Length: 132
Image 1 (tube, rainbow, N blue to C red):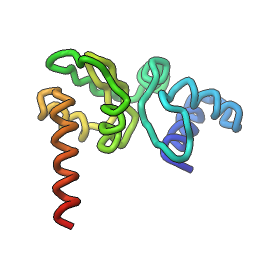
Image 2 (spheres, rainbow, N blue to C red):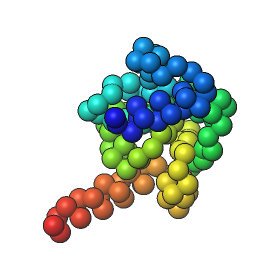
Image 3 (cartoon, helix red, strand yellow):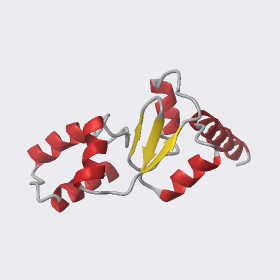
């Protein structure tokens, strides 16, 4: 079972909601921006997902405001970002919300500049691949 399915199932159990296959599929679509299980493991939350994670499940989130709004949140930007974000997150043009303290600290150290963060991580990954 992949991380997203396991997390969905555990949160539904916490909320006292059935975890049969139909219920899992329905909640999967409500909470996850890219609801495809298996294969592409996007952890991006929908508007409903972030609301339920914060209010119903009461998970601690960290909001990092961007120094200036993003021009757009493109698919390529999201694909690049998801190589480095290993947990659930919510993003819009003004901020990103994450649920892991480590990632929140990393983003804060970049002054909330997610584009610099993304570029730095990508360059680091390329340099590490070159040296192996």
